[in-house]
Image (cartoon, rainbow, N blue to C red; front, side, top):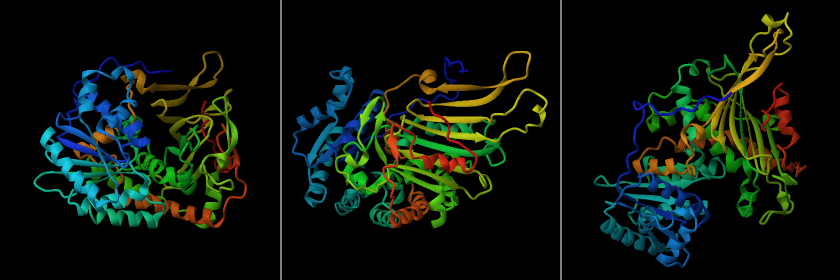
Length: 510
């Protein structure tokens, strides 16, 4: 059962987006994969949506010896061919600038200051600068310190300076604390935007609207009505060309303290006093601090790790993780994680949160499943009904963004028989599909100074406090059975056992 698509949006609630104010976006690591595949298309989509200011420029900084023309040609390849040569493309292309420089060389920042002054003069960008660190994590502190020493991070006379930092935010609690300490020695918390592109997904943002903007769901969003919550983030890809990085990080560090913790906090948070950035993040931080860290004994029973072997993904034979470029042939690094967590507060006490995330799984799919408690069976004991299915709400985040609510209904006929039906909708069918990367909303928010969808220092540290015990146990007891799941499956058997021991199951994803 699908809901009928809407034909128009209520004008009372529709607000046209306004272009951001004048600014320059400085991208460190401008020739890298993230910049080309995600940031450039996202900026171009914002240009097409008329959300970039007229007084705007992008200044790419990288070590590559490129001319401005070379850089612009490199960028062009990552935009849709039909856009080339259009008026919008010409305008966007003219906003692109390039500076060759070493991130650790103070001379680079002297040249950067000169280039920014020239751009301010040419484009009228009024000395508002957004610095995006699309680099390896080892450069984060160095770049921030150089920005401070050169005076480029200083804010005065109404001019703003903001720094966007990509994950990972540390490798454990100690490194996260050190990273935050070093960065905050130069920048105020309000200048720091720790980005997680999952928070740019429409469905993720809609979790708050769904919960707090609809009176029928918030009253039942608690331990009295919900049996458990299960979050799945599945990827069909392997480590691709990131083997060297990934073999030192692993899935737990790469996915759980950022993506998965953000999904948990948005799902479980209390209603904020307002939608201001700090009000929302205060409630998210409370949830993360209420999650009970696992004891060493709990880790053995409530945390599962896996590593993919060879197999078939999307009808294509793929190799094992240990064969991937940059990966050790005896690697003990996990490519799959499943965990059971508990939130010790009044709303969620006794409601387990299960999560699983991994690479080379059967399907690319991210969802949050809210499993409600079963209704009492007494009423149906003298009927042909043998089992009642619990209601289930599935929030689908990728690849098809949408929601589905399952419930029981009587099957037509003389006997009382129940069948499961589903009401569902997809964003693309209701509101139209747009070629977005997930970064558009986040980049726009950076430019207008809205930090709601970005992690604060205390949120990062709370996430690592939850995971540090798992890291410690797994380091002390290296996995002996890797690889333990075939590529193209849903992970190791222990992941299913994790839920089956509690009389539950992962939702079957078709």
